[in-house]
Length: 173
Image (cartoon, rainbow, N blue to C red):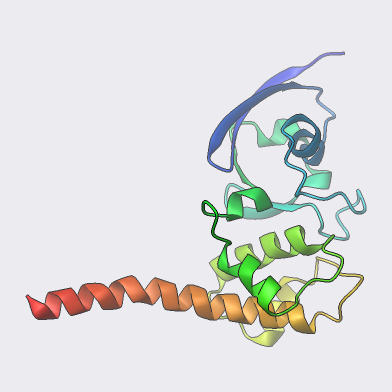
């Protein structure tokens, strides 16, 4: 079997592998790199459990070939944590009980992170539209939407906090 050497950055770390041209990116992440937070739910891109970011864009890794990620910047759910501190979306899903079995949660959080990058203050309707490609079989989405709203507020507050602190320092000078 012919293999192709690929190099990519996964969660800030340069990685490389020799892969068969038909290997799906989700299998590279899970089976080769051991990043099992990216789940396989349907193999057809319908459920969104495999959602990751590729070059800053939301992507369903179960329908993307690993060779298509050659040279790319990839972020998985494991890359959302800063040290031991949860990302605001992860914390909000915990706080708002936005998960039950947890199977869809990594993909849902990755999609929500992309959504908030695109639209930092989405309405409830925009949140629901933004996560519509990610299925949750356990919840009614109410708490997922609340979690995304909470995280949006926290991310907005933290984004404006350094500016406000800088303005206070400038005012004192």
